[in-house]
Structures are given as structure tokens and as C-alpha cells.
Length: 600
Image (cartoon, rainbow, N blue to C red; front, side, top):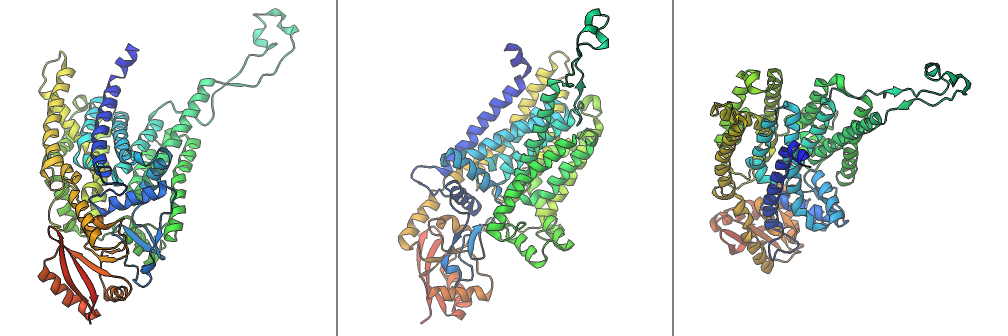
């Protein structure tokens, strides 16, 4: 037992470390989802979280992943929250289905009470498997340990581990686990071939026994079948099992965020190319088969919800498919490379803002680490130069692709678009970039400790101590920003009493069957208690539809605009269609609720 503990003390330390951060992540998730007095409908700070929680509950309780809104026929499909779409008369999820299916299935087995702990659990697993993956990849344990510790409080990872109804941490964790099992099965040089070793069994009466037993000629020969070594059978089973789990985990990752299919597929292909001679082809076929299982499940739900196997909840993808299907190379390029267009200026600005300016210490260390990867000799870096150059090339390609893919998008998460914020989607969209840069930062920390420790005696101990102090130097200001300084810090997000207060006040003024026009960020106040909300009016036919709805149900206008601005909006946009906004009541703070009626 003592020898086992000594052999695996680093893995045990990381296991306990991950347990601590699981508790931290779980604490923040629990504060949002189950605070005192919230009941079955917790209030989240974004429509994506609200919708995902709603659909997970629907799936876990055996209900459909869609619902019908009778007023969408006369209302031109306008009645739905921001993260829910209307397809063929059905209100359906407006995002990827993987998180809903995975978490809904687990909640169906273990109960709804497990939902707040699922993202923290997968996040802790992701940290541990990140260590295992880097240890396999670089064969240098200090780099793997420091990278895993850094991952636990990397701003994007920590923040979205504590906001558990987003897809991103689950996606990256499943991806890390899948890549680890794949690299593990390929990195072993003693790969079992498709033909197992056959060991012949000595038979009675064989010529080889003649000298040892002269009487053996008198014994009748017996024909035993060739014996397959038991250890070989066990190794073959383990090999195939590892291939299967790798494919299954990668398939689950892809259905969790299908938009990442290009770079994930290229990453897997790159790994297979690097280890081509080590591929066990029956295992490779099993890998592909396992990966297709989640994809088939996704196709099944896509067909039911969106009317097409390859469709999705995102409007951008749906609109592109409606234009030209998958037959056009231009449509494929748009979906897979530039779904939000190509704006080089926006790419550079957004990349600088969220890869450096928001957390300059992390960005600076990553840049220095890339330089060290390039110039350090192998004797000092402890990692082969070829492997370092290959990894840097991969990081560069991944960064360029994700910057192009998401960087041109003008994200409207916040009312004040120009403010750098923890809650802006770029932070979670570029989570794979932040993770890929962690080994570079870890190299800076370890090599700095190496420079500060000239002694040869107990060098590893002192180097580890200096590394710990550097990690603490990064940790303290990072956690301060995540918890306190930002206007979307975790402590402020957990205090969602204002949204709950507004919801209670609106309950007294508006019936669940009334229709409310709201600004986009306000649907967290209304949904799911009041699903009849309209979040956007874009074209003249939308206003015509609102005029039709005004004849059927009471209609309200919820806004943070000043009364003078509301009067201008009413005159400019609503009165041409026979409607007026009037009788405003302050709800709370700057939010007002107005009536909309037909002009008499």
C-alpha cells in the first residue's frame, strides 16, 4: 500500500485537488439553481442558460423537446424567448442538443437534484484528464501537473464551470477525455496487431518428447487447438475498449458543440497521421462506430425537431441550409469556416481584447512560453524540439481558425456592447485556445523555478516551491477579478434577486396568457413562467403581426428606455400600424412596463 501511494502520489494529489475545485464549482452552481425560495424555476443571467435548464428538465421528466404556441400562427412565429426558435409551428431548442440529451439522461437516472453538479463534475474530470493527456503527449510530468493546476482557475474555465448551463466546459472535457484515450492507445509502441500471438500446445506423442520420455511413442497422439495467450486476449480487449471509449467520448463532444466539428476532426486526423503505423485497424473501425452512435442520436432529434438530419437550432446554420443545402461548396465554406462573415478588423480587435487585454498576465506569459518552446534546447526543456515545434504549429492553426470562425461576429450579449466582460461569449468560444496555451505558460513557470534554483541538491523540491509561488501570483489577481471586480463577477451573478424581484412584480401586472414585447436581455425575467414573449421586431411584417395579436390578447411593452424615447418609438414604429404605446409603469430601477393598444 505504501509503495502504491509513493508511486501514484501525484495522481492522488491531483485527484484531491480536482475534488476541491469540484466543490467550489458546485457551490456557485448551487447558489444559482437552488437558492432559498426560488422553487422549480431558477433565474439565470442569460437566456441560453435558462433555455438549456428548461429543456433538460423537459427531457429528464419524459416530456418532448418542443411545445406548441397557438398564437404563433397569427403572430408570424414571433412568440418565443431568444434562445428558442420556431420551426414548423413548434417552439424548439435554439442551440446544440448534446448538453440537453446528456444532462437530461443523467437527471432522468439520478434525479433533477444532480443538475447543479453535472458541469462541476465534468469540469473536475477535464482537469484530471488534461494532466493525463499532457503527460502522455510531452512525457514530462511537471509540465502536465502545472498545466492542470492552471486550468482549474483559468478565467474562462473557472467562470463557465460555475455557470453550468453552458455547453462549453462539457464539450472541452469530453474532448480532452476522448483525445487522451486515443493518444494512449496509439502512443504505446507495443501495439497488438490484428493477429494475436498463437502459442502451440505440446501434444502427447509428439517427436519433441521422444528424448525426455522414450515410451511416448506408445501413447496415442492428441490434437489440441493452438492456445492464445490469456494476457494477449486481455490486452486485445483493453485495446478495443479504449478505442471504443475514445470514439464515444469524441462523438459526445461533437454533438455538444457541433460547430467545432472542423478543428476537432482535423485534430483527430492529425493524431492518426502522426501514429499511422501504430493504428490497430479493427480498433479503428470500432472507434468510428462508437463515434457515430451519438451522431445518429443527434440526427434522430434533428429530424424530429428541425425536419432535417443535418439541421440545427442555430438560425445562422438554418438560414444557410435554406439558401443552398449542403450541395454548394460556398454554403459548406460559410457553415464550416465563416458562419458570421469575414471581417479582419473585427477579428484583430476581438482577438486582442479577449486573448490579451482582458487578462494581460495570462497573454504575456503565453507569448513568453511560445518563445521558450522555440529556443530552449532539449536538455533544459525536457521535451523534444520536434514535439515542441509540432505543438506550436497546432496552437497557431487552432487559434487562427477559431479567430476567423468567431471573431467576425458582433456579439450582443450585453446592452453596452463595447465593454469587455467575463460574460461575453468570446470568452467561452475561445476556451480551446486558452487551454492550448496553458503548456506554454507552464513552461515559463517551471523554467523560472529552474533559474531561481541553482542548487543541485533537492533541486526538484525547490523548483516545485518556486513554481507554486508563481502559480499563487497568477491565481490571486485572477480570482479577484472573477469573484469581485467585474460587473459580471460570480458573486454578483449569484445575487440575482433583482431579476426575481422584477419577475414577482411583473406577475402582479401581467397574466401568463398575455403577450409581452421585451428587450433581448429581459427574457430571463419572464421565461419560463410567461412564455408568450416577443424579443425582436425587424421588418414591417413583424409589426403587422403584432397588430393582429393586439386584437387577440392583451399586449405589453417592457423596456429600459426613457419615457421620451418610448413616445418616439411608439410614433415612429407602432402608430403606422394602428398601435400606440401608453400608460407606462415603473417596475424596478430603469425597467418600465407599458400597454400596447389599437389606436381608436
